[in-house]
Amino acid sequence: MNPKKVFRNFIIILSLLLIGITACRKDDICTDEGTPDLKIKFFDAGNHATEKTVDTLYVIALPKQDTLVAGQTKVSGLSIPLNVNADLSQFIFATKHNKDTLVFNYTRKTVFVSKSCGYKVIFHQLNVYLQHDNNNWIKQIDIIYHDVVNDSTHLKIYH
Image (cartoon, rainbow, N blue to C red):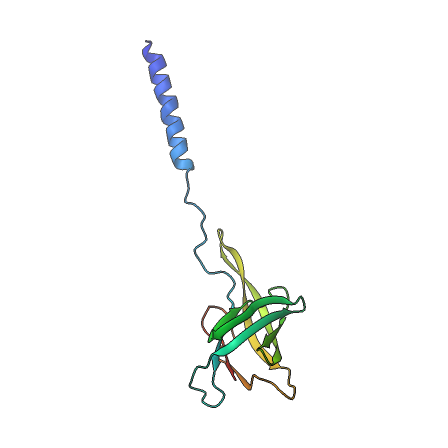
């Protein structure tokens, strides 16, 4: 074998190997949290310190009538997604015997998370309004955090 050919082949193989090794990069896998949900806990209206489950709960997102919770029993808390395309979200919270409509309004901020995760929306200045009628099963609502930026409990509902 010609030593020049061997050396040339060695250089070509070494160059390809170096290009292959340096071309590799870390996988872009998103491990950060995305857009946070609104987290709600249920409490006893007679004793605000006591958690109280809802016997049977239905949660329906308006206006599309999307069912988020369908007859779940013994609910002590839940997470619901707020609308990332509008500054308002409406939900019907219903039991077997009654239904109440809650209207949430807020301001939205889009935040860049990372190249692999992209963007997420966080919600600021959260307010909630209970549409009152003569027979509300929800007696009171307390906002714990007006900013929905993580998955901690943001709202207490007393019934």
